[in-house]
Image (cartoon, rainbow, N blue to C red; front, side, top):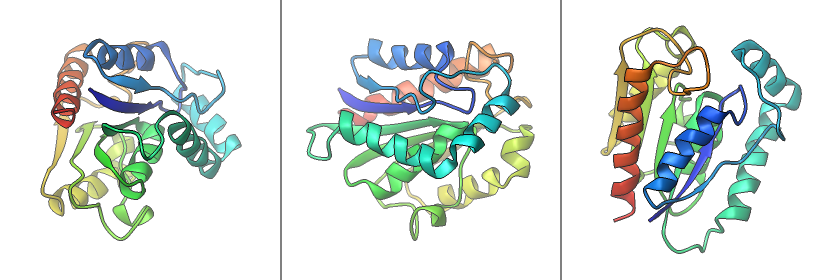
Length: 198
């Protein structure tokens, strides 16, 4: 069993994110899904991003850190895997780079340079990054370059690019959902988490 934290994207803790977490729970893992928005959800990405800006990205990162500290203390036995979707990739990446004992990280639809949270990606922390190859937010905002840089500098890291152009393709409750790409992403993440729990 692994301990897993799943951070939602800018549209909030949607039913699609809850469903993703439930799949990991069905595999026997202990999964936490912090609600960084206190119940607010959005169907349009622009509205969700505006809400995140109102709260402040620093505040959201701190909410994520506190939620994980409360649910999974640092002396908790077992492996901790951080998973983040788009906006949620920020706290997932921050914890992977700064919290001792993280066994792996999965960043979906977003990735920032390792220098945002430290000198480099920490050795011994496996990583997966998932995005669509034509996702303008991922490609044009520098996330693709950041992901390639981290993957190139890390022994156990993979960048998975899927055919298509949508951003939140893994969330089955949103219009961007791509069933075939999402199915592959989910299986890759399930396998990744299972490997961390051995």
